[in-house]
Image (cartoon, rainbow, N blue to C red; front, side, top):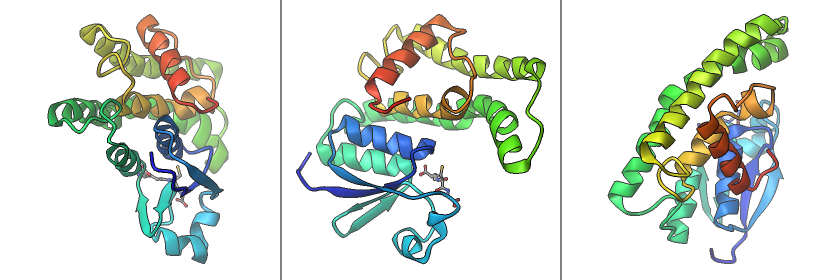
Length: 209
Ligand SMILES: N[C@@H](CCC(=O)N[C@@H](CS)C(=O)NCC(=O)O)C(=O)O
């Protein structure tokens, strides 16, 4: 990457911010991290001038401003001329995009019941924490999610979801597990192939996860 330092407005406890940051780290982008707390700093007049949507992550690269985590990730891949993490080749990129869509439209739905019942409802809604028995039920849905990953790896016979190199698709799935597996104690080891993948991606996403 060029030596310019970009401004990265983000919050450490946010999966989309982690996706953007891990990608920038992977590509050795130089950035200055500006901590913006959601639902507080995101509503300030000063921040709304940077992103009128009032959300993080946002990047300012000189006079160019871009939000949305995947757009930020793809922007830096294209800028870096990256040919592996998110290739310019139409077919290779389409394969990665199909996996990202599978993550967003299907896999995340398997993470959501745990996220909502174990974390969000008690934290934001003052609800009781679910019982151990209920958490076991919720774990089954998480396991169904990890089976999607295990099946993909089995079909491809590769270390990562779209081949033997880590791609944006791996980071996408990985950070979708952020709330249940990092912020809470859901298990990621029911399917051996998915567990090995998880540990492999964790080693590549240079974040303390
Ligand atoms: N689709 C966006 C989602 C961004 C988003 O929802 N960010 C949350 C933090 S995880 C936020 O900034 N919320 C602030 C607010 O709603 O005040 C992306 O991928 O970047």
